[in-house]
Length: 330
Image 1 (spheres, one colour):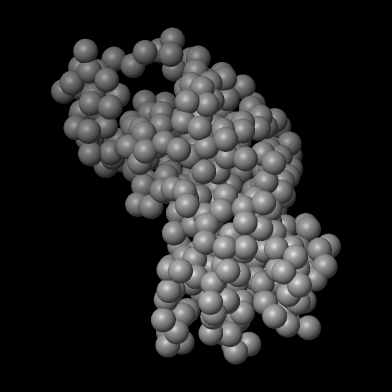
Image 2: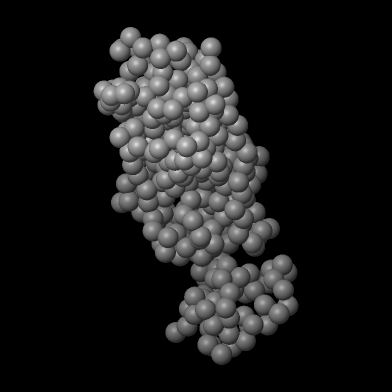
């Protein structure tokens, strides 16, 4: 028996397009409609009418999958998602995956069982093939972290350029021994921020030295430990770029325990502009991500997919800003 995937393959379109033709969606071009209808006829495909009826029943619930609910970076994003969801009659369900594949699969099973109308994925552990297959079945949007080259809508910032700007700021202050505190994981942002760091050094004629790179897990403690490691180097760094504000705050505390002054002895730059960045002393220089707007945009894009208002995949890159505060300049 033929499946909807067989029809999509024969017609050279997506499963979502076949579904729209079957449901009489007027946004599909007449030429595409004809191709799909021809493939249906040739394959003798018979849609499951009961299944279609069930799928049309909305739960008015959205799953939001995030890797660490304790990370303050996600708070403003979730607020943006929830505000837009509420205005449109939806509720959200927060799903803390802990970057665990088995836990994530349980939530995805809920989605496939139609217990939710769609999902916003903050940092999925799924493979590219698994994500592509999921997006053909149910509405999903990737937010912040995303897999490159997939036909799946995502919203993020230019992480490489943001890191490049941050490190250029440190270079512009006269620093040449600039360290990097990153995170070893599968997140695209981690890779891109390291690339931005290296590009800024290279263009300034500063040799990239892996010894000046230490890694943590976005937490305060890991930033503290990474900075201890870097301060043991000879010569020690005079500046450090951290890929998260929490690690940057940990780095500052570590430097203070060594009786170093920030920014006189060590300039520190973070990333995200979480709420604590302007409360800490010294206030933290950082890359500001539009966290609330990221959440709002992700939810709006997901609603477009759910309501069949947007057929094309959208790769939405939002603006970022370098916020200069006391941790790099007095």
